[in-house]
Length: 289
Image (cartoon, rainbow, N blue to C red):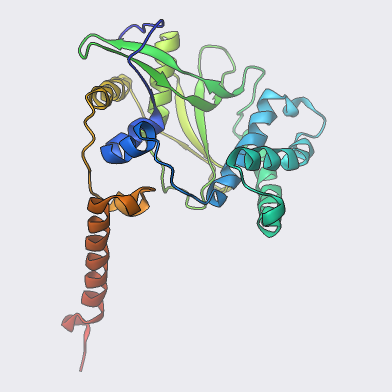
């Protein structure tokens, strides 16, 4: 690790920005450089945003100190929904059925979340939510200073020596879209800020109360590799290196409709999927006369 330089930087880069570049540099250019506007439906993200907001308030507004923290969290649901909908420019009045279903999900899973926090001792007087870990780091190897940006969902410590960094996930698919490098990114930021590694890194799954936490393995080498990868990506961005990278991720890209290479890749994937289905259906080894 290199000692951070705090006064100026060549590029701001977040975890999501770096992941976008690694997925497809052309996607990064569209999103972060050209800032291409693509209509999207925010419905899929509202549950995660709203439950994350409630548990941010659980810590930062000290709802846990009150006589009935679960009830206080449930009472915060309307304000959380209003706030995240306003941020997403999503009309509550025009989507009342959806909002009612969203409120029902939050009422179901928030009590489980409070119990998860209690059972796993994810609470102390020093627990914090939405912690800004942004830090400027300089690399002699690349001759660059990068503002490594981002907020950690939750940081816990009981003794100011051992720190746990957790990220909340709300997808209905427990292990899908999970990237341990996200937590290692936060660990790198923490190390650069305080010259000490966190003791634990984990994901907390609000939709899976029976199996709510995954702790991930990491070491100094994984932090070092993550840190170096950030400068590799930053160098490419500063050199305007944005080639298309076709992959199975093309079908998930927000910009697929304006990317000829991506559209061609999607056709190939669809043809392969159709061919595989036909092979299964008409496999002569499966036909018995």
